[in-house]
Image (cartoon, rainbow, N blue to C red):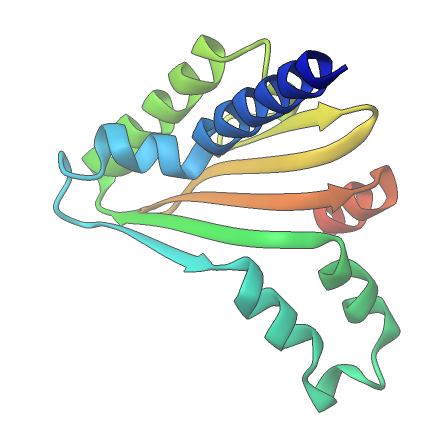
Length: 157
């Protein structure tokens, strides 16, 4: 019996270590391309910051915003200015998604915007918005436990 528990603990620790190595899209994108472009930035709202935001008094009267924010764990926003960088990074983001097509499924796309989803048990755990508009490339990476209503509300914005 002791060996069985030891084996179970070993398996659990290995799966935890594997899960911790799993990077979200924006982190992976910045690791690959972050040093190649001088005008690229990444702003992060961490899980602890999301918890602090949920405690703000200004959210008490707004149940819609509170509902949306409660489904998020973290937000990463990657931006780059400049026409050549905008077009190049947009293509590179698409290529990265295609390289990970088992993980990220294309939800919607047009010439200037793509949305990819990563699901686990029919729950959206990661949403990636890639856009190029005017002179700017933007990648917005949302993680959490989001439902389809959340997605539809965001795509209306």
